[in-house]
Length: 536
Image 1 (cartoon, rainbow, N blue to C red):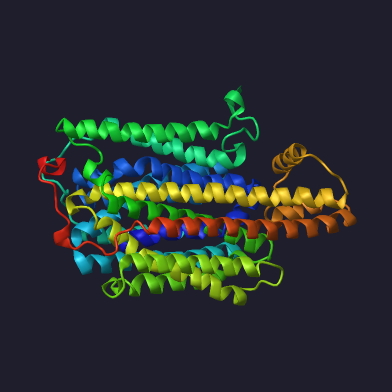
Image 2: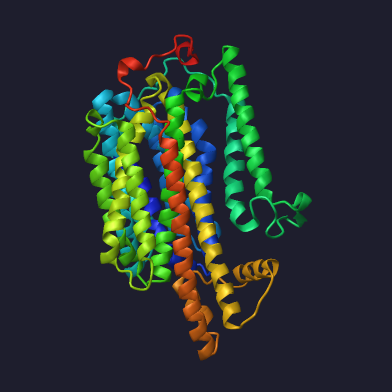
């Protein structure tokens, strides 16, 4: 399970540093490649809840083997992709579908295989493996992107999958339930529709606005902006209503003595839900940071993809060490306090990065804040997985794992889409403001917004390669003016987005106060004798 996690994490992290290069190779925009990352999260979010219940009906060993083979197929398609459509097919759809099975299966297998301190160590080691993947991903991806091709990053994963398939024989061949229950089809449909609506709403919000339309939205040739609103507000509202209907449907199903997709004792477990929300918001921060940081380093400071990986090395090493070696600290300091210390470390690291953003920023100067941010992530991950999964009975671990992972997927999608869109929107807005000041032109707020949208649509200038391509079309005086404006705009966008992430970290700190002080022991987790799991 650790090897599987390593491969999936490496896949995500190595692609972050390759975004600018992929933009140039496919002759597309950051938004398009960002869309592939977000769609990957969307597919996982849509499928992960029903996929999480599969171990109750099928062999964990067989599930893992099939998921790995499908994942390898998606990896191969992504590696040979000749346009963004094929990239989306292999990376976002095929790999995303396989990852939707792998993520909750990993948590489930660890939960049922270990108890108490052993379980804490297992989750801590898994977090450490996650950190190793985060460490090697940017370095491997950066080296391959700089000196060969980002495609080798996908190709090498095929070797890893082959190794893992050999070790699959050590996973239990038995399903978690002796009696195979039928799939809750109604709950599955509602969960897929709800997650898809929410994540799609988040994806569209940056470009089309949250409530009021920022620009026309077309489905085919039909414009959809009822009452001048953005499509995002309708999708988000529809997603929330669908999940409300999902809870009601599951309640009715359980009262009728049938097997729901997620038992009510999971959905109403306060300790579990507080852990899920904390995990979700942490995912938002991590996804946002891992999107803006590589783009900023390469587009402004001129780092190669390999140097970007080195800049992220302190984060990865710190997260590995703290995730692996602090799992037993809850015996001396409450688990909630450890999580909160980690959150504070993340916030201080982001504040230091905000303070030093500018032309003089170097890898050496970034070492302390990046390492501090990584240490915070490691402290959180060392406790939160075990704390959350231990709050529910072991028999309900598949469903709980599905809920935890769908929350994390929605968080990653939200962080990538919204934080990324805010970063790019701030950049383009600063470019427009700089040009208007240079030309001594004053326009209304509405006209300024129109100019920002026009610039976004007319030219992609958020990476160093596309900036240079754009600047080569201009006269020398125009080029000098815009070079300075681009640099200033990117610094402004970076600082503004770091402030946004700091605000989200403060929200995370508030939410963490609802976590239980300590991780429940085995005898504190009681199974409900009337639960559907026992009737299966």
